[in-house]
Length: 410
Image (cartoon, rainbow, N blue to C red; front, top):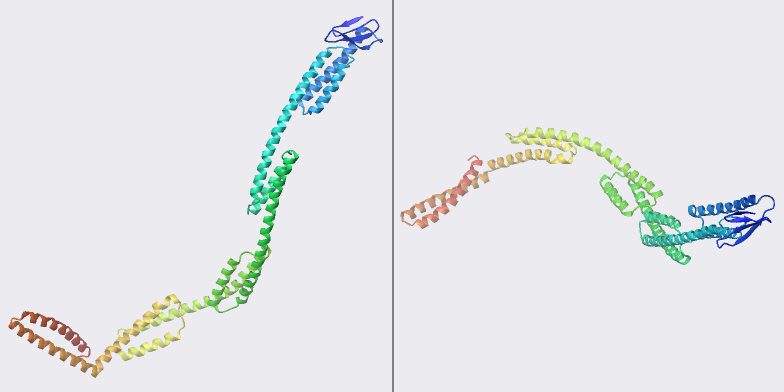
């Protein structure tokens, strides 16, 4: 008979394994060799179980083996250990399996808590997504809000599912917010399309009028109308993108035709008026040579000759007109003043009236001087002072009349 701390082989070749309570259990029989070989064989069976249990322990510790699969594997090994045809410390293997059960249960609770935490985080994340989507549903930033809502959908898809009821309720709110935004955006752009169609029709009319005016030569009124058309164009708003540029090019093209033609005409006119200004300045120089007037008849003839040539010349630039015309008017006034002075000198009736007035005033002055002398001789200074004031007034009139009489050569 051969024995071992954990088993023995009797004379009949029966192999036993010892249990923790000291009893024995038959695990097999051995007839082919020595008892030691029998024990070695059944020990190898035991070692095989040790290896399998070790492998399962490592899988539980180092992989994401599910608790269900781990439990199934443990029970399978426990059955093998319980009914094992092996020699060794089978109770120790059972304890290792018991400990492994505890590890799996702890891992199960840990994963359960982790899953609960993830679910709670997912719930808060989805509630935040729903709240943001409902806020965006009222936005009028159509492009930015639309892009953000699409990004929220991608974020939603990346989050774990909740229980069906909670997940469905949140998704319903989220989906409703997106639908509300899409409906509002669709209505907005439908309205915008209608407005742009109205703008296109209005701009077609503006373009038609602009093109009809492009060959006009009524420079002032037409330029003013083009300015009005431009204001109307800006007030109308934009047409559809595919029409806006074409309409604008036609509108601007019509204006360019008109204003190019006007600029050409104005350039020719400006050149002509600049030349006219040189001619009129030369005539103004010639007219100013007439002054001072020494021979009224010759001066009148010379000015008439200059003025006839002046009138034959066309317009000059508007900003230069006051100065050059002012020079001619100054010469004309000087000749007119000379004519008035000559008329006064040669008018007998005017001379007679002037002489008569002068005589009357002189007589009045002489009379007042006599009255003043008489009053002072009588000691009546108050009367003399009063008469003196009257004398001063008459003397001023007499001086003025004498000056006028001198103009008649008197």
